[in-house]
Length: 292
Image 1 (tube, rainbow, N blue to C red):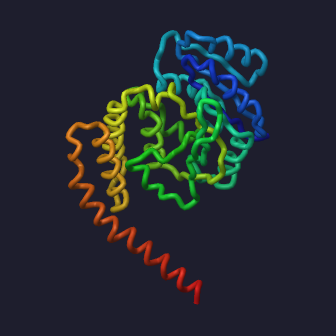
Image 2: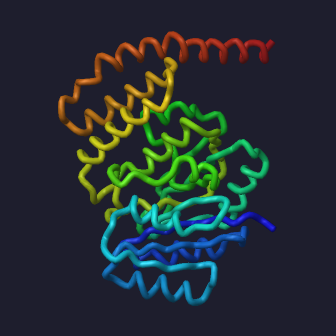
Image 3: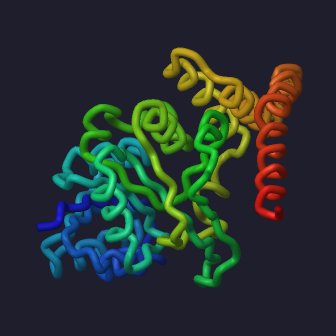
């Protein structure tokens, strides 16, 4: 018997695309899953759509929060109700491809040391037309997580990760996922998956566009500083990516935008000397040897 995948789907007034998101889960080739829909106080047709699907399929469960609790608390409620060995969450406006669960579960089954996987994604517009992509190469520099959310919208982690990492932080709404991934990367083995397993819908009504961008930048900066403390000692590459991220978010925040610039300039030189230059030299030597 295949181990169960628990999918949490938090939704607030997501009636426009919700059925498409649920249908993409129903279409999975991996059939041992449960879908936990957490309605965060919707006032549109979300409740009717979700309840109808829950009535048709006993793998689908629908819960409604007594009041709007925001994304982190909705996720925490959903995962507290979950029973699967593998955990993930999705959004009401995004779509899984049919082999998404099977591909991610296969990665865990192949390597029992893995705690977290994340895949490449297509980016689609309001009408479902592809407008871009997030590609996760196998040799991805995972230390970039120190300063940037390199995890796309499709991911999965084990029950053990959840037991140790715990809940999403309600105080970091708008960066709750970035914070969670940083905490996982500091503790567990992670692996990017090159395959495209998901379609992320970029449209004017998603959180990325509707929330205050300066506030998001401030929260991301705070997240980076907080989670750097998870490491006993940062290596040169981690320090470079950390200050690159801090500088980026401080510039976006527009409050003392040059605050981290001297640190970034310093670590950029170190990064060039000890990381980028040796890697470039190694590629040139390898190419020459192959030519000979």
